[in-house]
Image (cartoon, rainbow, N blue to C red):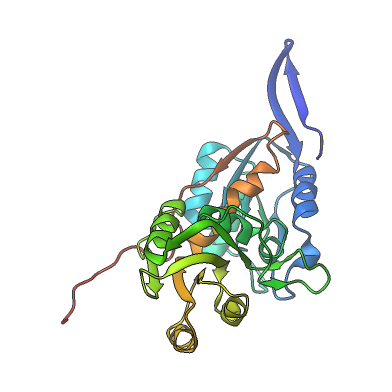
Length: 286
């Protein structure tokens, strides 16, 4: 952990800061950029490594609402899970939404750092935080272990402290996760017993087979599509819980913020709901 730099004035502790380079090293020590997928864009998106940082805002998405919060609060760094510039670009003119955001951050002296798929596979990582949020208390193991280090990998599976019904598990998960317009969608018998739970933060239908093979009673993830979910349910008894993508990754922000707990740096976890969906309508012909 890097040492905090204290600014002293008239014998009083005025503020605490670290350089941006110090903070980047802290996050990359935990979330090694080498673990990211080849298509991913992680690390420092903008900011001067020599800049002194006193406040860090954590958020899932680098969007205008989050930039507003950072600028209003006086943050020098935003740490997000999702990248701003995932695809290669040849320019960032302020005529585009992402270009405007880059200009606002740079003009406001706010750096942007991303830990995405490298945080997904870390130990602990995004899915560990999700597992704890929905009630798993015991040891966890990856659903899809990394080839070079089996303790790391995508998804997590573990046990509840005691069996509960699927209805009870889903109610508890809803309380443990931030509320969204879509809530939680469930496929399965509400009175079936749940003890072994698999989770994956973010889009997780690629791990449907792994959840079944691991013996999960329920698999909780995001962005499940109709056909894979329907076929999965036809082939076995594992229940499914589909949660908003943003909500499954939001619990990780606290874990990331804890990396700065002993530095004296001020941290804030954004409560801005940056899920893409804003409301539901239940009216219909049936």
